[in-house]
Length: 407
Ligand code: PL4
Image (cartoon, rainbow, N blue to C red; front, side, top):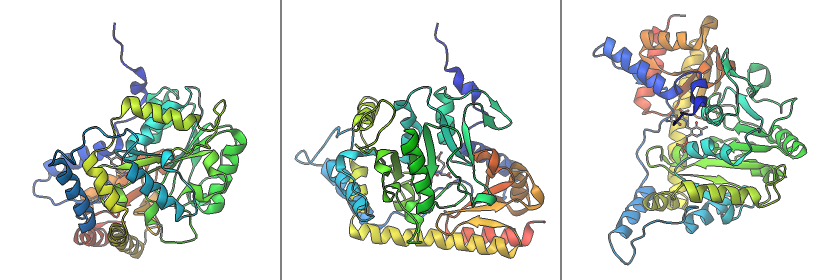
C-alpha cells in the first residue's frame, strides 16, 4: 500500500506566496475594476539588459547549427560559467575553485534541497523571521515535530527583532545546520563581518554547517558589509553559500543560480572534500544541469558590460526602496531595511496583526504586501514591502498609502 509523506500534514499553512496571490485574486473578484498595486512578491519587473539579451541570443544561435549544438551538459554547470562565478569571488578576497561551484536553476531549489545531504537527526536553526523555504524543506524532510503557535517542535528559532537590529547571535544550544540570509529577506537587515564571524566561530567549534543565502548580495552598497560569507576567515571550513542571478540580473523567470560547496568544508564524520562530493552526487542523480541557453545569459551577466548594466538595474530598484522608505516615514510609520536590501520591513501601526494589516492595506490603499508573520513567529506585527516594480507603480502605491491609510 502506498502511503504519502505525512510530514506534509505538519506544514502549518499553504506556501506563503501562493496564499498572497489567492487573497489578492479574491479581492479583485470582489471589487471588479479595482487596480491593485503589487509590492508583495519580490519579483523583478524590468527588462533584461542588452548584454544579457546578446548572451541569450548567442545561446539560441548555437543550437541552430549542428557544429555548435549541445544537448545535455555537465550536471555541475558549464565549466566557463563555473570559472566565471569562481572568479567573481576573488574580487572579494575569497578563493573559490570552479570545482566548488555548482550551477543550478535557482537559489530556491538549492536552498530546499541542500538539507538532503545532511543526517536526519541534524538540529536545524533558522533566523526568525526567514524565507519560508528553509523551514518548510526541513519539515517535509521530517526534521521537526508538529507546529504549535507558529513554531515547529525541534527547530531552533534565532529571533531577529528591533532589540538585535534584526540579526541574531548564534544559538545557546547545539545546532547542526544554521540557515542565514544576508541581506535578509524579509527584514532587509545585513550582517556585519563581526556578526558573521560569530557564526563562523560557533560553527567551527560545534562542527556545524552554515547555509548562507546571499541572493541579495549585490544590493549591498555599504562597502564595509560582507557580500559573501567567504570574506570571513575560516568560513570555507563551515559554510555553504547559495546565490542567484534572479535579483541581480533579472533572471526570476529565466532561472539560474549556484551553490558553493567548499572542498575544505567539514562536518561530524565528514573529512574535507566529502560534502562537496555528496552534493555532486546528489545533483548528478537528481538534476540534469541548467539550461544551456540560460547559462550563456549567465556568462554575459558576469561580463564587464553585463555587470555594469545589472548595477544600473539594482540602482533602479534601490531608488524604489528609497521612495517606499521616505513615503512610509513621512506617514509616521516605523520602517527598517530598504537601504542595502530591496525589502522594506515596517512595523504595523497600533500593534495590528500582520494579516489584518494585509487586509487593511489592500482595502484602504489597494496595495498588496507580505504579512511578516508568514516568515515566522517573530514576524508577527511586521509587514514587508518589496521594492521590485515599475517606478510609476511604486510612486502610486506610496501616494495611496500616504493619502488613504487610516492610522
Ligand atoms: C516567490 C532569500 C522572493 N515563488 O529565484 P531564485 O530561486 O534564484 O531565488 C529565490 C529566493 C532565494 N532566496 C531568497 C529569496 O528571497 C528568494 C526569492 N524570494 C520573495 O518575495 O521572498 C520570491 C518569492 C517565489 C519563491 O517562492 O521563491
